[in-house]
Image (cartoon, rainbow, N blue to C red; front, side):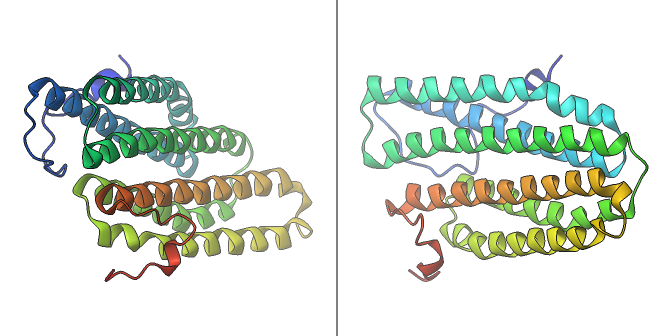
Length: 247
């Protein structure tokens, strides 16, 4: 049984999703709830892929890495399903502006979750290569990046589900901090390559994993931007840093 089957515990009506009001058409509400359920299921699976990939690295457990790689297919299935459901809602019901933003932003959330899963698979593949070689202490340098990337990802989902614009606005500075951690790690390992050429393959794989974590932060920031747009109909992409939290 795959992760998709295991994740079917979500309630049909999602507490925490913003209440958009009652619609005359019950079938519209049903379709919207199915879409919400599927994207929350996909969120749970994407988070688990990231956790399994990093735990596979930090614990030198390649079985967890293999699990990440295998379960990515179910993420792809859900992304297609969410896109199909979103398009059908817009064609059948012609939702009003606020509901249309919800549908579109949910479809974009699915796309970002799929990219997070892809980065997790990239981490898992690199981790398997590292696990085949002698252990090096430099792997621990990835832990702060992992904690920050996972925290940004979780908070971006919370901002989306709860319609929390203030939380959404807090994530761009945290993503910049993650970028700085990535740059620092890369510089540190580049300096060690000359001193220990035997470990160059491992160091390179660590650098690529750090880059994947940094990209997960980018996708989480995209989710936060879409959460803000969903609530305020304001596109803050590329101007995120200029938006004031009290706006």
